[in-house]
Amino acid sequence: MTGTQADASGARPHAVVIGSGFGGLAAAVRLGARGYRVTVLERLEQAGGRAAVFRQDGFTFDAGPTIITAPFLFEDLWALCGRRLSDDVELRALDLFYRIMFHDGGHLDCRAQPDAMAAEVARVSPRDVAGYERFMRHSEAIFRIGFEKLGHVPFETFGSMVRIAPDLARLRGDRSVYATAARYVRHPWLRFALSFHPLFVGGNPFTTTSVYSLISFLERRWGVHFAMGGTGALVRGMVELIRGQGGAIRYHSEVGEIIVESGRATGVRLASGETIAADIVVSNADVAWTYQKLLAATPRKRWTDRKLENARYSMSLFVWYFGTRRKYADVPHHTILLGPRYRELIADIFDRKILAEDFSLYLHRPTATDPSLAPDGCDAFYVLSPVPHLDSGVDWVTQAEPYRRAIARRLSETVLPGLEDQIVTSRVFTPQDFRDRLLSVKGAAFGLEPVLTQSAWFRPHNRSEDVDRLYFVGASTHPGAGVPGVLSSARILDRLVPHADAL
Image 1 (cartoon, one colour):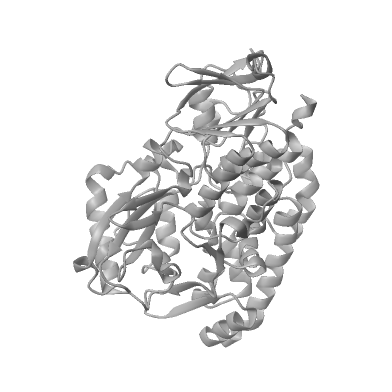
Image 2 (cartoon, rainbow, N blue to C red):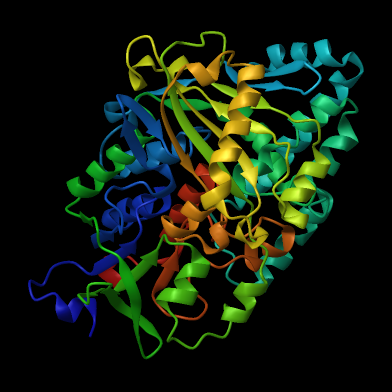
């Protein structure tokens, strides 16, 4: 059975995309532009994956990513469909990227304009201004290699890894992001500000390869943006692009198995028993889940169950979404609130895998930019705490509410006075939800941890090494997590998937 044979109408070759996160949606648009008839299969009730949206009591909450740092990757998708991103979505650039609030009461504002940022560094630590500028030049050098040259390039052979080894050695890819920042600046606030970004992609700043130092320059290069109406506006826009190409998105369609014949993916079997033939299959599901569950009956040489079980997985997240009956006008769009420990807390999360009593938080207040996301006079928030994945053994059924209350107390004592009396709607998302709702192995929020030995060629390839005509996009394949990473994984398909006319 092949997709072409099964398509009695003689239509274009058929591509099935499993999952509708940003990676899956972007892959569908790119495949549609390359001549494929595309069907996206989503097991949930809406598109978006980690970027889904939920509405509750008049509030609109983006479930996951809130920061857009490389708008051109979205603009490219709209251009493939003969449209402009601005026709459908307004991206608003933020002048204040983040306010970092330290446990001792001080703060650092990370700003868009280089001069304003340099002035902020000088306010905190005048002796570190020159070192900060050197760090940014180093970040740019890594960006030119890691993002511009390699971010959209597949690493299918070990030789491709060998070819970049001189660049990695010159830029000290063996160092961690934190160690790299510490070489340039001395003040602990600045060391944090230049090293925390790996947490946005599931990495430990003390072990993640310094290649991820490029994020600092990436933010300077294109800025930090917010999609008006919420990140879900981008999801809705991409869904309409797919439909405009003649593609289809089917909800409540859980894939139970990828059908493999003679070593080649020929379609999928849904949990309902229905089979759908395909000429190619693209999985936006977690790579480990795909191999262990959807290819359980298929012999594998590279990504065996044992290899996947021994891999290192990212941390998870505890996310609390809430709305308040009043506004907190002094709270910016993005705030990072640090606890009393940094290195030790990170070790608790990644190494010891224990749920510590203290925490550091990322607070998102989208109504600072778009008041329409909450009823008049109200604010919408989510607060995120990095926590260990499910190997910790934490019983989130019993621990979720005490943990939420502890976070509420902390916020009430700091940036949201009186919070506990102002909450009008509330919802939590735990590592168990990452496993059960998003099918993330171990409840890891970002797939495999982005250490050097699980990056580039060492990461699951975008073209399966074990099954022909099976491809991967999303956080757990190359180049990695984060919105730019998952969109780039779909961009890589242009180099790997033959044009529909060639099949």
